[in-house]
Length: 131
Ligand code: FES
Image (tube, rainbow, N blue to C red):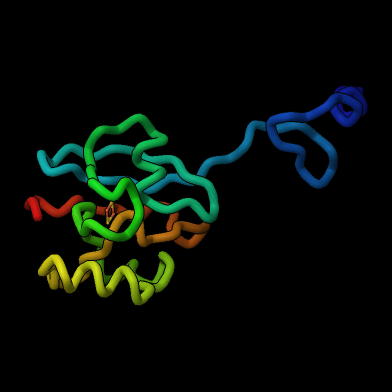
């Protein structure tokens, strides 16, 4: 009875294949800020880390280009064993990291990493330095 009811309403949250409305499932990663505090960051498949952190209401990462892969200020470290679980580094991100002198192993730009289901549970660390 309940499923018939839910199949007939306009589902603005998420409708699974059987037609039931269920809360949209967000995936999660974790981000350790420069003070060592660990934050949960929900995201959807295809979001980048920089945007996800801001959409979570966290004021823990900054970038004067506002996520444009240009300033090199959102350097974030990813664990070696999880490097393959985010998008590959594109040329513009590599150029930006090189131009800003960030050649730390496992450094990525938060705005250059696209997250997907494989990214769930990664613990990122915001690089503890300014550019
Ligand atoms: S916010 Fe500027 S490079 Fe990421």
